[in-house]
Length: 311
Ligand code: UDP
Image (cartoon, rainbow, N blue to C red; front, side, top):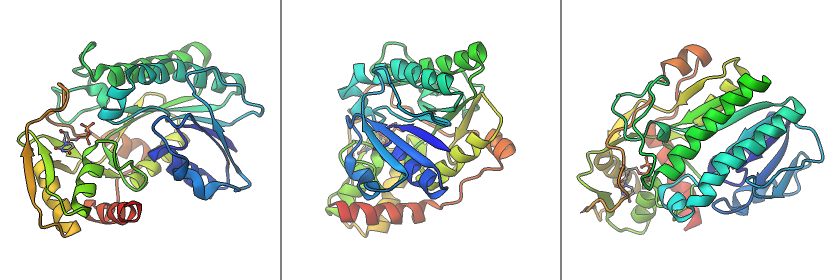
Protein backbone atom coordinates (compact mmCIF):
# COMPACT_ATOMS: atom_id res chain seq x y z
CA UNK A 1 0.00 0.00 0.00
CA UNK A 2 1.08 3.58 -0.63
CA UNK A 3 0.22 6.20 1.97
CA UNK A 4 0.30 9.98 1.86
CA UNK A 5 0.97 11.51 5.28
CA UNK A 6 0.58 15.27 5.48
CA UNK A 7 2.48 16.82 8.35
CA UNK A 8 4.90 13.94 7.83
CA UNK A 9 7.83 15.90 9.26
CA UNK A 10 5.92 16.82 12.40
CA UNK A 11 5.89 15.18 15.81
CA UNK A 12 3.08 12.67 15.23
CA UNK A 13 3.37 12.58 11.43
CA UNK A 14 7.00 11.46 11.51
CA UNK A 15 6.17 8.63 13.92
CA UNK A 16 3.40 7.59 11.53
CA UNK A 17 5.95 7.47 8.69
CA UNK A 18 8.09 5.11 10.79
CA UNK A 19 5.13 2.93 11.66
CA UNK A 20 3.88 2.59 8.06
CA UNK A 21 7.37 1.83 6.78
CA UNK A 22 7.79 -0.79 9.51
CA UNK A 23 4.55 -2.42 8.31
CA UNK A 24 6.06 -2.69 4.83
CA UNK A 25 4.15 0.14 3.14
CA UNK A 26 5.35 2.93 0.88
CA UNK A 27 5.24 6.40 2.45
CA UNK A 28 4.98 9.84 0.89
CA UNK A 29 5.47 12.47 3.58
CA UNK A 30 4.30 15.97 2.73
CA UNK A 31 5.16 18.97 4.88
CA UNK A 32 5.94 22.65 4.38
CA UNK A 33 8.18 22.63 7.49
CA UNK A 34 6.31 25.55 9.08
CA UNK A 35 6.33 23.83 12.46
CA UNK A 36 7.66 20.41 11.42
CA UNK A 37 11.35 19.66 10.95
CA UNK A 38 13.45 17.69 8.50
CA UNK A 39 15.35 16.47 11.53
CA UNK A 40 12.35 14.29 12.46
CA UNK A 41 12.66 12.31 9.22
CA UNK A 42 16.43 12.60 8.67
CA UNK A 43 16.84 8.91 9.55
CA UNK A 44 14.52 8.01 6.64
CA UNK A 45 16.54 9.77 3.95
CA UNK A 46 17.55 7.21 1.34
CA UNK A 47 14.94 4.66 2.48
CA UNK A 48 13.70 3.00 -0.71
CA UNK A 49 10.03 3.12 0.28
CA UNK A 50 10.11 6.71 1.59
CA UNK A 51 9.68 9.97 -0.26
CA UNK A 52 9.50 13.51 1.13
CA UNK A 53 7.71 16.30 -0.70
CA UNK A 54 8.12 19.83 0.65
CA UNK A 55 4.73 21.35 -0.08
CA UNK A 56 2.04 23.35 1.69
CA UNK A 57 -1.09 21.18 1.61
CA UNK A 58 -3.23 24.32 1.71
CA UNK A 59 -2.19 24.74 -1.93
CA UNK A 60 -3.57 22.28 -4.50
CA UNK A 61 -1.80 18.92 -4.53
CA UNK A 62 -0.84 17.00 -7.63
CA UNK A 63 0.65 13.57 -6.98
CA UNK A 64 2.39 11.70 -9.78
CA UNK A 65 1.30 8.35 -8.38
CA UNK A 66 -1.91 6.92 -6.90
CA UNK A 67 -2.19 6.36 -3.14
CA UNK A 68 -4.22 3.89 -1.07
CA UNK A 69 -4.36 5.89 2.16
CA UNK A 70 -4.37 9.61 2.93
CA UNK A 71 -3.67 10.71 6.50
CA UNK A 72 -4.13 14.42 7.09
CA UNK A 73 -1.96 15.36 10.06
CA UNK A 74 -0.63 18.72 8.86
CA UNK A 75 -1.36 21.65 11.19
CA UNK A 76 0.31 23.84 13.76
CA UNK A 77 -0.88 22.15 16.96
CA UNK A 78 0.51 23.93 20.00
CA UNK A 79 -1.24 27.06 21.28
CA UNK A 80 1.91 29.15 20.77
CA UNK A 81 2.27 27.91 17.19
CA UNK A 82 -1.28 28.43 16.10
CA UNK A 83 -1.36 31.89 17.64
CA UNK A 84 1.76 32.74 15.73
CA UNK A 85 0.29 31.32 12.51
CA UNK A 86 -3.48 31.87 12.80
CA UNK A 87 -4.24 32.16 9.08
CA UNK A 88 -2.00 29.22 8.13
CA UNK A 89 -3.77 27.15 10.80
CA UNK A 90 -7.22 28.02 9.48
CA UNK A 91 -6.10 27.38 5.92
CA UNK A 92 -4.63 23.95 6.58
CA UNK A 93 -7.78 22.90 8.43
CA UNK A 94 -9.94 24.19 5.58
CA UNK A 95 -8.08 24.12 2.23
CA UNK A 96 -5.69 21.42 3.45
CA UNK A 97 -8.59 19.17 4.37
CA UNK A 98 -10.34 19.93 1.09
CA UNK A 99 -7.22 19.24 -0.98
CA UNK A 100 -6.42 15.98 0.80
CA UNK A 101 -10.03 14.77 0.55
CA UNK A 102 -9.88 15.51 -3.17
CA UNK A 103 -6.83 13.26 -3.43
CA UNK A 104 -8.66 10.48 -1.56
CA UNK A 105 -11.68 10.91 -3.85
CA UNK A 106 -9.52 10.91 -6.97
CA UNK A 107 -7.75 7.64 -6.10
CA UNK A 108 -10.48 5.93 -4.08
CA UNK A 109 -8.12 6.03 -1.10
CA UNK A 110 -9.10 5.58 2.51
CA UNK A 111 -8.87 8.89 4.38
CA UNK A 112 -8.08 9.66 8.00
CA UNK A 113 -8.40 13.12 9.53
CA UNK A 114 -6.40 14.05 12.61
CA UNK A 115 -8.87 15.98 14.70
CA UNK A 116 -8.47 17.04 18.29
CA UNK A 117 -9.94 17.21 21.77
CA UNK A 118 -9.93 20.97 21.15
CA UNK A 119 -13.22 20.51 19.26
CA UNK A 120 -14.74 20.20 22.76
CA UNK A 121 -13.32 23.62 23.73
CA UNK A 122 -13.50 24.32 27.48
CA UNK A 123 -15.82 21.36 28.03
CA UNK A 124 -18.92 21.43 30.19
CA UNK A 125 -19.25 17.65 29.93
CA UNK A 126 -16.68 15.57 31.79
CA UNK A 127 -15.29 13.24 30.58
CA UNK A 128 -15.93 14.11 26.95
CA UNK A 129 -17.84 11.60 24.84
CA UNK A 130 -17.77 11.74 21.04
CA UNK A 131 -21.41 12.84 21.11
CA UNK A 132 -20.62 16.02 23.11
CA UNK A 133 -20.91 19.04 20.82
CA UNK A 134 -18.42 21.18 22.73
CA UNK A 135 -18.12 24.59 24.33
CA UNK A 136 -16.09 26.56 21.82
CA UNK A 137 -15.75 30.28 21.15
CA UNK A 138 -16.09 31.07 17.46
CA UNK A 139 -13.99 34.23 17.81
CA UNK A 140 -11.58 33.66 20.72
CA UNK A 141 -7.86 33.30 20.02
CA UNK A 142 -8.03 29.50 20.20
CA UNK A 143 -10.82 29.48 17.64
CA UNK A 144 -8.30 29.46 14.78
CA UNK A 145 -7.42 25.88 15.70
CA UNK A 146 -10.68 24.69 17.27
CA UNK A 147 -12.94 25.92 14.51
CA UNK A 148 -10.57 24.87 11.75
CA UNK A 149 -10.66 21.32 13.10
CA UNK A 150 -14.43 21.45 13.54
CA UNK A 151 -14.74 22.59 9.94
CA UNK A 152 -12.33 19.83 8.90
CA UNK A 153 -14.56 17.24 10.58
CA UNK A 154 -17.63 18.66 8.84
CA UNK A 155 -15.83 18.62 5.49
CA UNK A 156 -14.70 15.02 6.04
CA UNK A 157 -18.22 13.84 6.87
CA UNK A 158 -19.53 15.72 3.82
CA UNK A 159 -17.10 13.94 1.50
CA UNK A 160 -18.14 10.68 3.09
CA UNK A 161 -21.86 11.34 2.70
CA UNK A 162 -21.76 13.10 -0.64
CA UNK A 163 -19.07 11.14 -2.49
CA UNK A 164 -18.82 7.97 -0.42
CA UNK A 165 -15.16 8.61 0.43
CA UNK A 166 -14.03 6.00 2.97
CA UNK A 167 -13.21 8.38 5.83
CA UNK A 168 -12.11 8.15 9.47
CA UNK A 169 -11.84 10.88 12.12
CA UNK A 170 -9.61 10.53 15.16
CA UNK A 171 -9.94 13.05 18.01
CA UNK A 172 -6.50 13.15 19.55
CA UNK A 173 -6.10 14.10 23.20
CA UNK A 174 -2.86 15.44 24.74
CA UNK A 175 -0.04 13.34 23.32
CA UNK A 176 3.66 13.52 24.14
CA UNK A 177 6.88 11.81 23.20
CA UNK A 178 10.17 12.14 21.35
CA UNK A 179 10.25 14.70 18.48
CA UNK A 180 8.09 17.28 20.17
CA UNK A 181 9.72 20.67 19.66
CA UNK A 182 11.50 21.97 22.71
CA UNK A 183 10.21 25.49 22.06
CA UNK A 184 6.64 24.69 21.07
CA UNK A 185 5.39 26.07 24.38
CA UNK A 186 3.42 23.02 25.44
CA UNK A 187 3.64 21.78 28.96
CA UNK A 188 5.62 18.59 28.23
CA UNK A 189 8.58 20.14 26.35
CA UNK A 190 8.49 23.20 28.63
CA UNK A 191 8.70 21.16 31.83
CA UNK A 192 11.23 18.66 30.52
CA UNK A 193 13.42 21.42 29.07
CA UNK A 194 13.32 23.31 32.37
CA UNK A 195 14.00 20.16 34.40
CA UNK A 196 17.01 19.22 32.27
CA UNK A 197 18.43 22.72 32.64
CA UNK A 198 17.94 22.53 36.40
CA UNK A 199 15.38 25.34 36.39
CA UNK A 200 12.10 25.50 38.32
CA UNK A 201 9.06 24.32 36.35
CA UNK A 202 6.64 27.08 35.39
CA UNK A 203 3.12 26.12 36.49
CA UNK A 204 0.51 28.50 35.10
CA UNK A 205 -2.40 29.62 37.28
CA UNK A 206 -3.14 27.49 40.33
CA UNK A 207 -2.01 24.34 38.54
CA UNK A 208 -5.33 22.66 39.28
CA UNK A 209 -6.31 22.44 35.62
CA UNK A 210 -6.22 18.83 34.49
CA UNK A 211 -5.03 16.93 31.45
CA UNK A 212 -4.56 13.27 30.46
CA UNK A 213 -1.21 12.62 28.80
CA UNK A 214 -0.83 9.72 26.39
CA UNK A 215 2.44 8.43 25.00
CA UNK A 216 2.74 8.71 21.23
CA UNK A 217 3.02 4.91 20.68
CA UNK A 218 -0.43 4.41 22.19
CA UNK A 219 -1.87 7.02 19.85
CA UNK A 220 -0.23 5.37 16.82
CA UNK A 221 -1.78 2.04 17.76
CA UNK A 222 -5.20 3.70 18.04
CA UNK A 223 -4.82 5.41 14.66
CA UNK A 224 -3.81 2.13 13.06
CA UNK A 225 -6.73 0.23 14.51
CA UNK A 226 -9.18 2.95 13.50
CA UNK A 227 -7.83 2.95 9.96
CA UNK A 228 -8.56 -0.77 9.77
CA UNK A 229 -12.03 -0.51 11.32
CA UNK A 230 -15.18 0.25 9.38
CA UNK A 231 -16.37 3.34 11.24
CA UNK A 232 -16.79 6.88 9.96
CA UNK A 233 -17.71 9.01 12.93
CA UNK A 234 -15.16 10.56 15.29
CA UNK A 235 -13.33 8.37 17.80
CA UNK A 236 -11.50 9.73 20.88
CA UNK A 237 -7.98 8.43 21.41
CA UNK A 238 -6.33 9.39 24.68
CA UNK A 239 -5.69 8.14 28.18
CA UNK A 240 -8.17 8.50 31.01
CA UNK A 241 -5.40 8.95 33.56
CA UNK A 242 -6.26 12.49 34.63
CA UNK A 243 -3.80 14.58 36.61
CA UNK A 244 -3.45 18.24 37.50
CA UNK A 245 -0.68 20.31 35.95
CA UNK A 246 0.80 20.72 39.43
CA UNK A 247 0.94 16.94 39.97
CA UNK A 248 2.42 16.58 36.52
CA UNK A 249 5.19 19.06 37.41
CA UNK A 250 6.04 17.06 40.52
CA UNK A 251 6.29 13.84 38.53
CA UNK A 252 8.59 15.44 35.93
CA UNK A 253 10.86 16.86 38.64
CA UNK A 254 11.07 13.48 40.30
CA UNK A 255 11.91 11.56 37.14
CA UNK A 256 14.41 14.18 36.01
CA UNK A 257 15.92 14.47 39.46
CA UNK A 258 15.41 18.22 39.39
CA UNK A 259 15.83 19.91 42.76
CA UNK A 260 14.90 23.38 41.49
CA UNK A 261 11.21 22.85 42.28
CA UNK A 262 8.23 24.71 40.86
CA UNK A 263 7.29 28.37 40.33
CA UNK A 264 3.66 29.37 40.14
CA UNK A 265 3.07 31.94 37.42
CA UNK A 266 0.00 33.95 36.53
CA UNK A 267 -1.80 32.16 33.73
CA UNK A 268 -0.80 34.42 30.90
CA UNK A 269 -2.09 31.88 28.48
CA UNK A 270 -4.77 32.90 26.12
CA UNK A 271 -8.31 32.86 27.37
CA UNK A 272 -10.04 29.54 27.08
CA UNK A 273 -7.24 27.41 28.56
CA UNK A 274 -9.49 24.44 29.37
CA UNK A 275 -9.89 23.76 33.10
CA UNK A 276 -10.38 20.05 32.59
CA UNK A 277 -9.95 17.60 29.77
CA UNK A 278 -10.45 13.85 29.80
CA UNK A 279 -11.64 11.55 27.07
CA UNK A 280 -14.39 9.02 27.35
CA UNK A 281 -12.68 6.18 25.49
CA UNK A 282 -15.35 3.50 25.71
CA UNK A 283 -15.97 3.73 21.97
CA UNK A 284 -12.29 3.13 21.12
CA UNK A 285 -12.28 0.24 23.55
CA UNK A 286 -15.44 -1.41 22.21
CA UNK A 287 -14.85 -0.68 18.54
CA UNK A 288 -11.09 -1.17 18.32
CA UNK A 289 -10.24 -3.19 21.40
CA UNK A 290 -7.85 -0.35 22.09
CA UNK A 291 -6.55 0.85 25.42
CA UNK A 292 -3.36 2.75 26.22
CA UNK A 293 -0.47 0.62 27.46
CA UNK A 294 2.40 2.96 28.33
CA UNK A 295 2.55 4.23 31.92
CA UNK A 296 3.21 7.95 32.34
CA UNK A 297 6.54 7.44 34.15
CA UNK A 298 7.80 5.12 31.40
CA UNK A 299 6.73 7.41 28.55
CA UNK A 300 8.22 10.40 30.32
CA UNK A 301 11.51 8.60 30.87
CA UNK A 302 11.77 7.89 27.12
CA UNK A 303 10.85 11.47 26.28
CA UNK A 304 13.39 12.77 28.77
CA UNK A 305 16.13 10.72 27.11
CA UNK A 306 15.19 12.20 23.75
CA UNK A 307 15.30 15.79 25.01
CA UNK A 308 18.58 15.11 26.79
CA UNK A 309 20.10 14.28 23.42
CA UNK A 310 18.53 17.32 21.75
CA UNK A 311 19.90 19.61 24.42
N1 UDP B 1 1.12 24.89 31.23
C1 UDP B 1 1.84 25.21 32.36
N2 UDP B 1 3.15 25.57 32.21
C2 UDP B 1 3.79 25.59 31.02
C3 UDP B 1 3.05 25.27 29.84
C4 UDP B 1 1.71 24.92 29.98
O1 UDP B 1 1.31 25.19 33.48
O2 UDP B 1 4.98 25.92 30.97
C5 UDP B 1 -0.28 24.47 31.37
C6 UDP B 1 -1.25 25.18 30.45
O3 UDP B 1 -1.70 26.38 31.04
C7 UDP B 1 -2.37 24.17 30.28
C8 UDP B 1 -1.66 22.81 30.43
O4 UDP B 1 -0.39 23.09 31.00
O5 UDP B 1 -3.32 24.29 31.30
C9 UDP B 1 -1.46 22.08 29.10
O6 UDP B 1 -0.94 22.97 28.16
P1 UDP B 1 -0.43 22.53 26.73
O7 UDP B 1 0.01 23.77 26.03
O8 UDP B 1 0.55 21.45 26.83
O9 UDP B 1 -1.66 21.91 25.95
P2 UDP B 1 -3.24 22.21 25.89
O10 UDP B 1 -3.80 20.98 26.51
O11 UDP B 1 -3.59 23.44 26.68
O12 UDP B 1 -3.55 22.35 24.46
